[in-house]
Amino acid sequence: SWIRDLQIELEAPSGEVVILNEFLGTTGGEVYLGIPDDSDDYNPNPGTGYTYCWTPNATNPPMLDYANTYSVSTMPAGDYQASSGFGPFVGCDLNGTWTLRCIDDWGIDNGYIFWWTMEFDPSLIPDCNDFVVW
Figure (tube, one colour):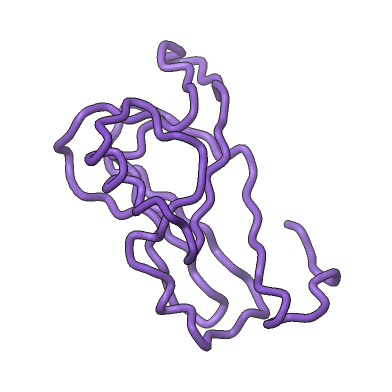
């Protein structure tokens, strides 16, 4: 439910890692992702999810830079730059298993991934219709 306690990483099939959201420590105000049910204690409910996208062409900076600059209490839905940039993926293998890893570095709260997807530039892979959803 909080962006400040998460490290979010995407790993390519050949092992390259891009940090989408870097955990920067425990300082700063509360910043929610979407509208969480923050009073659900021992019976977690997902709340309302927002759509966030990390893309090399995003006009918004990385999420925590955005939150610190604009002093938001809820991250607006939209496109954001990756904390580490996408450089590690240049020239990497695209075929294989991609792994989205979310590490919660503070206890107590919970969170949900409502769905996730990836899109490649069509010039890299002309026919992306033959894929498997796990």
